[in-house]
Length: 305
Length: 249
Image (cartoon, rainbow over the protein chains, first blue to last red):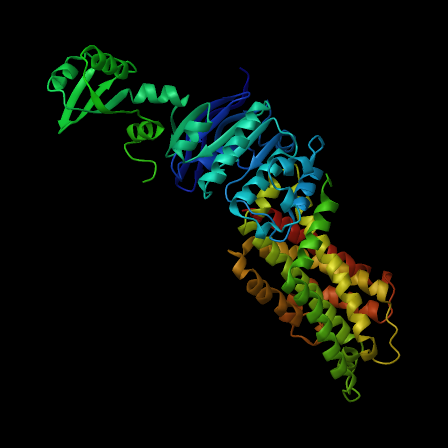
């Protein structure tokens, strides 16, 4: 896989606040890469350095082989950007915005009308920006980010403030970008979004990147714990569960057993034990850790705090 | 370099005209002001001194024209600060659009607006002009556009320092309107104390008023080449300073 974005040891300070501290990562061609962390962790600053909108104090960045700060106009021709909390002129019409953006790029490949159709905005083409809903505005910003058929798309907190339905629709659009061969670099503070959308994620906190990998491998590495919840009235059950090698604790409360252990095999081992001993269960559930738990483990606090 | 300039200018004109108060405040108010002042000046008794006489001959049109230019620049300041606060400037910068193209488009919008207002003003107020006045309207319009263009650079400087969009209009007004007092429009510069004469010479309005009055009274452009040059120098200096301190977000 060819690296499309290479960031090495960038640092950015505002006065005495260190926004980004020695951040390094690589984004490969054709993947959806997510920078995840709480608000104020340095996600947006990092992304805007990569887009060429800010100059890092130290470190180096290369995007598509270009220096984003010195070759910013060359870079802008080849990337598409959606900024966090951006606005347009209140009374600009949807089609005017698309038409204006299309005129700014050398490359004329994308049909604006088709793009609006794909994004479900065709019936809103004559509406003023100020009269669009949050989801419609975000879809318009996606249209503007895609108007030059970019090689890399930057999406900063794309679905913040949207209802679940609009969010799912936008996730589909992002996956669609990747399926069309584009590289996507996004930031989010929603762990669910990162887990469902990203091929790889970097966890950032206080401007530092703590770990980078696929969501699955991050979970496996940092949170190998597995939990099985089941209900049974079998009197020998507790003894049997304790005999399973990978089980670390069995807690019983009435008929409910909470079995904790480590490793992917734990669930299989419990099922095996149930069938071997003919233990009848009336409920069976597993609790698997997710990125949220990884974040909690790595930073010592929840992402929402 | 200029890719997107015309389209952006055209869209900004349309967006401005869709703003109900924007078009009203910048076009209708100056025209009404001209009509009212014109009627007032016409009914004034024959002026006694030379200074007052020159005011009544060219004063009202020049004063109202200067006000048109200032209100265009104030509108520029307001729009720039609203665009900055809303992240619109930042969004436009995340494209191959050059920053100077964005600002040039806004100045062009204001020049078009100034010219349109001036023409409307003459159409609406023709009958209030003193009898026997045949002002060269085309040259006068050009002179006012040069004035607006020059003052727009002060607008950028003000737009660089206003903290939020809410303060843009009042701060701009407080800075710009007093400058008109020292422009020679009300009191000839020569009659000011030496200290204020120096202040007047350091402000673009002095040259703008001299240029506008001269052109109104039928002077040729060559007679006012130095005023045009001075306005150009002000533009270059203020633009250079604001380029240093301008904030895009």
